[in-house]
Length: 444
Image 1: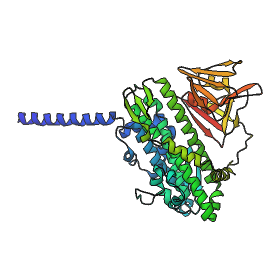
Image 2: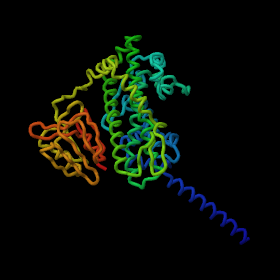
Image 3: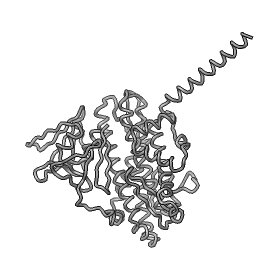
Image 4: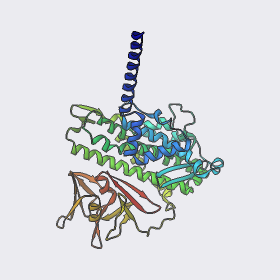
């Protein structure tokens, strides 16, 4: 009897040990659901908001785990935010509008936790039609997935929802790519190893989607203008659609620029990470970035969109998107919850916010010096040194040359510099609320 009891106790202890071992492994797996949710909450505020609000809207948290890529945090986070953003776009109108959303089709495009743009759908045609107007050399990877539907996905939104489905994909790719990009401190606060490759895979895996979906949207409008003028007129007169497109386009463009800057900074800062033969190397191990993005294909699309027909469409999209905002209202800048008082008003030039240099550098914990002979401003925080020259559309981060969209300038005796560039060069997160003309900056 005692021997039998001892055997039972031994089996129970063994079972308990195995159970605890599996539980420990699950909780310490980087890509366990619990860990990914913690990472999302800590590093990706917008992605976390999208996921939480969607799960609350449907009262269901089960979809999250469907998009986990075992062993790859950045890839998992990118896909989770991308896919649940689709759900957010589709489901939030029901929450915001109630019965109205049952009678008319709407999409809710997430811009920030303070701005969601509700877009009422107008009549569309299936996006498959535009395929015949896209030459072979402009047919990218996502052309097959989202225009031709090579995977035979039933009820593919980018096809049946027309321009509104394409905009939904545009935003989903932006939100997913942004969430992956925000994992920089997660990956680079630890030692550098082969896992660091996952950061680049997570970011560059959806890098080219910016050029692809912008091209698809403009091509759709060109096709509609030619063959479906009534559909075209309804879309081009849809102010909320135009507002959403322009905001997502600008946000995604800024993100792509920041990714390029971040890669240069990483390559400068970490000498054991380098590029060679189209690949990225850490020590003696490398990956081919060509597997994840094709800069040549993106450039073909970008060059195509510089043609007059596309530029004309873009100009039409930019009309009447002011959203009743006075361009004369003051710009407010908040850093880590504190409003910054400038001795000279911030301005907007070519879509970029310029602010007094000393106030912004000091608010972000950096020292600043001015060389009157070279007209150079130098900001320094920790191991990051930023140099800008008045009147030049280039800057330097640790001696790495970076192109600027707008040059630093002196106005009424005050030196103004591009706010977003300075903030993101110092690893801060930046959000712009157009309704209140407020820039919110959070430093890590």
